Length: 559
Image 1 (cartoon, rainbow, N blue to C red):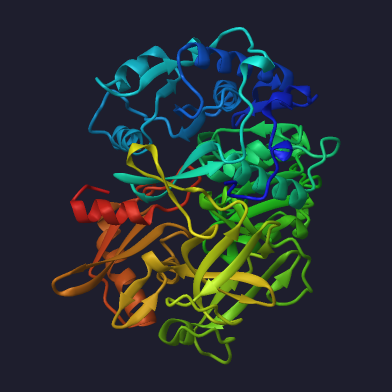
Image 2 (image 1 turned 180 degrees about the horizontal axis):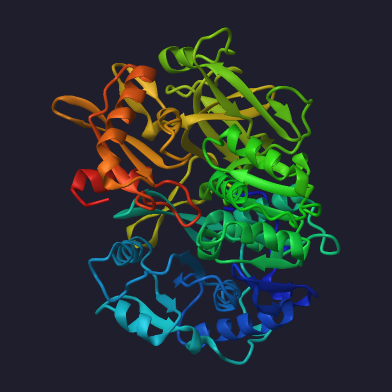
């Protein structure tokens, strides 16, 4: 039974990608490091597909790709899809020889969850280090260098065939693996094509998100399937020089980009310290930003900082999505009436914080009462609907907070289970675990159910406490993490903060952080841990890994 309403003739056809005239350009922080045309990439991918089939892999086998951003990664990924295999792109273990290293332990956990038939690594040294007795077959990029396979050698996918596996929520020791079918990926990619209005004659996409990140993977896939020129930069290059991202957009005339709030905030901070007046962002027509929640200040700062570099404020587009819906669920595509909290395609609400936290009510802020600002993530993309529900499943009215459920054609088949089976979703609906509400058709995110801090009967999103902590002059925005845990004596809240200050200042930072939280929220932190910059674990796209921080703290692993 087809899980989504996509005909076989409408499925993404990877055999025809080489017909496009565009190229993929690879960048680092300094400039161009390489370029491959779609035709050249297609030939490499067909060679990889033929090699994988010749080596004994069969349709539906899962293949792990721990590879860095580059032509080899794209060719292996595309080759898997052409061969009817199911790729899962993952981060490269930085120290594969060290079994105790975090990256290696995470890799082993992924192998356990996904049960791949093969793993494709960059070189023999990595393959040898990762190989285990009785495990999957380890191959290298060199093993995939074969003559291109013909169309007759390549299977034609069915709508319900697994397209890829995307790692998503879960702890580092037990990651969840979402299975996405060809029909589901096609539905979301086609919706993204329509939303972005991708035009091969006009557009150029530039981003630095890794291919194992759902946003990086699906934006890349959406770009390739429309034949649009694509510029890819490794995330490490962005981290080394955040302005290189905007520099490349400026010099290469890119029209579309995307990043989490961390990216926009980091680029803004770097530009304010070391301005580059020759940056020109005239060509940038869409800059997507997604995470939960999206801080209005990060968007406003980016807009104001780069206004003189000809940034169109309407280019900034908040959105919401996740791997379980392939990628995109909602986008704020409509232009807004200008106002105090509304400009371009950005709209925000200032809400009464006490009503939100104590009574789970959405009330506009007034007077001097404490407030919180939430950003509209827009309306659903084609093929999806958004439902906000109470714990008993009742549909919420506008301005009523509940758990966000997404229903439609791009909702995943389910999470991968031991033995390779998929735990199916019910009624094409995914309960996201995110809390939010709808007003005037727009979706607003206010927190995540599993990350909520339950303190003295109050439900507090960690983001609110972190935002307050980051008002401290020695703690930069985005440099704190708050989580809670329960023991026999009750629920406790812990904060980790990063600072540039010397160790002899850390005790003061602890006291002042605890005081900020006590004065603003009326409870005491159980512990405050002060770290040097870079101490908080993050995803490769810069998002704070709260669940990992909590896991490390409770298991006694050092931060």
